[in-house]
Length: 141
Ligand code: HEM
Image 1 (spheres, rainbow, N blue to C red):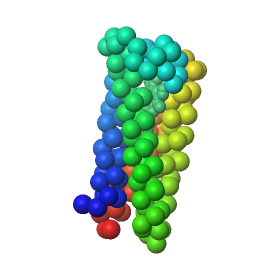
Image 2 (image 1 turned 60 degrees about the vertical axis):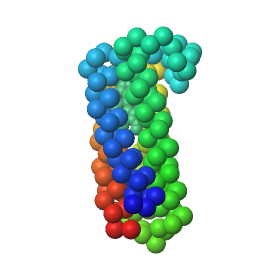
Image 3 (image 1 turned 120 degrees about the vertical axis):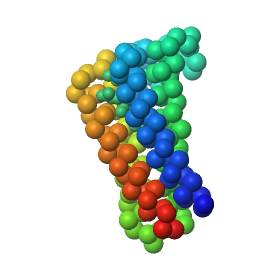
């Protein structure tokens, strides 16, 4: 297992877990448990009710996954620059996760505008796709 495989496979598992946790956030009605962004009631760790715990786990996991995807792109760029498809898919995943963090902020500040929540869901699906492609391409390295 090289660094690229570890990072890209962890990213894919992380994005999958985020999609599951996002679904739990929506279905449990936890989307507005933290009414502000990036903190929750102005704190890093507010009083942990069940809904706050669900919403904050979604946000913190998104941050970890963001760093994993950034790491995947950096390693692809530094060590596997000649692998054009790997570099492209890891770069697209990085753009998508950055957009997703911004759209995640908009889901909160728009008070769960249905159009924004739908875009948030659509971008997660695309992000999962590019994470899987990156992980599969990393297996050839
Ligand atoms: C890679 C990052 C992320 C992924 C893959 C992701 C994925 C998802 C998914 C799949 C849902 C369920 C949507 C639905 O059922 O229609 C969701 C819900 C949600 N996400 Fe994210 N998310 C990410 C980052 C964030 C961030 C950074 C925030 C910041 C606040 C956020 C806030 C929310 C909120 C508030 C909901 C609940 C929406 C509702 O209750 O209708 N997400 N997320």
